[in-house]
Length: 62
Image (cartoon, rainbow, N blue to C red; front, side, top):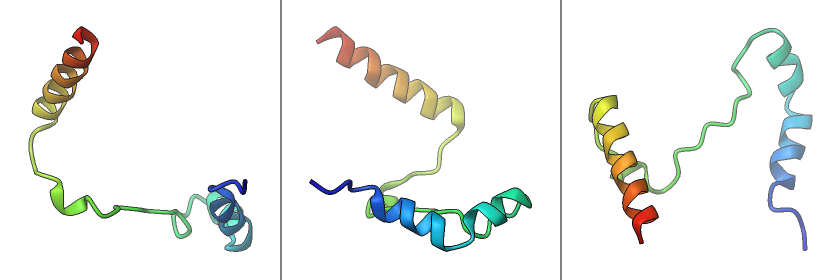
């Protein structure tokens, strides 16, 4: 089976990523928001952290 990440590795090698990274440039960063970006909600970091912690604890209690 082909490595599903192989196209990302090839992209990094062929786009000048290493050179840009060495100079501190973010020009070749892979930025992905995915299909769920529209589901995001603005909320304070403390609230997000609390929700994540609550969800994790609930899963651990199962």
